[in-house]
Amino acid sequence: MSQYMVEIALTEVMTEGFAEKIPAQRQKVNEMMEQGVLTSYALAEDRSKLWCIVKADSEYEVMSILSEFPLIDYMDLAISELMFHNMVALRLPLFSLN
Image (tube, rainbow, N blue to C red):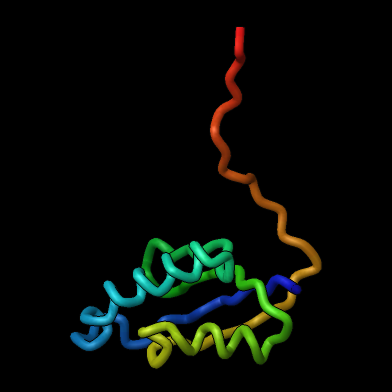
């Protein structure tokens, strides 16, 4: 399984239809993160771009996964397969039995 960086340009972000779909988008992203399909998801401060890392076997599968996003109609996608993606793992602090 490969990892793909997806850069997403958001279009028409200030429309009523866009705003109405934001809660459903967040829910879908959370579900995909819990399933391990998405490993990261970030939004630019000016809300013009999103970036996410997707685990998939092909670009076609990435497109299939992202087509489930409620906001897909407002997104222009650029997909790049990654050689590697290093990140700090979230973990519980170590504790001593002493």
